[in-house]
Image (cartoon, rainbow, N blue to C red):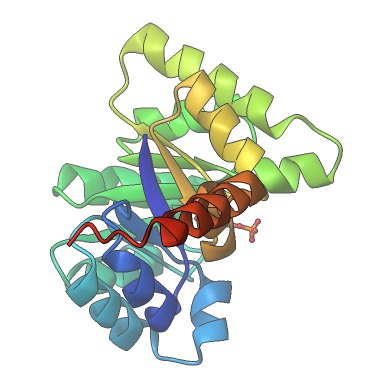
Length: 217
Ligand code: E4P
């Protein structure tokens, strides 16, 4: 499973880029706004640090303007993936950009029917928001399972990118159902490798080692 970082914070991205497990980045208008930087500048900075797909989201709501924005964002760097909302105009934009060879991430997906249409529109990625569904008492991971089955039935190449991740359990569940990608806020990524028994176990090993007076080097 690929791991993307859900962030527009260049310091966070740079700090985690040398771990070797960041396969791409997702941003959205809220994350860009939080960064306080111009979208083109920030996306260019991120693409200089990360080789994998970097999602940059359009903000227009009509097809023509969305398409123009998508083309402008795609021109920033070869690894930009244009992110469009799951609306009629977004799906039309997805079709046009995908036909021209641009990768598209269709975002704000909350139903399997929407995911089916995104695949038919040629999306490279579909982004179902599991956390926001859980927040309203629905089954976010159940949606991922359904989309996995539907895409497998028809061999769709669209990758299922699990978004709005709130916990490490979401990551494990996404892997269990066979999602292609999870996009994680940095704190969830960090939480994935941390465990109190790892820390206490390491402390005990190092204390015992110190008593031996040995050095490996
Ligand atoms: C990523 O593509 C999404 O924009 C993001 O995961 C949304 O997460 P949120 O629901 O925590 O804002």
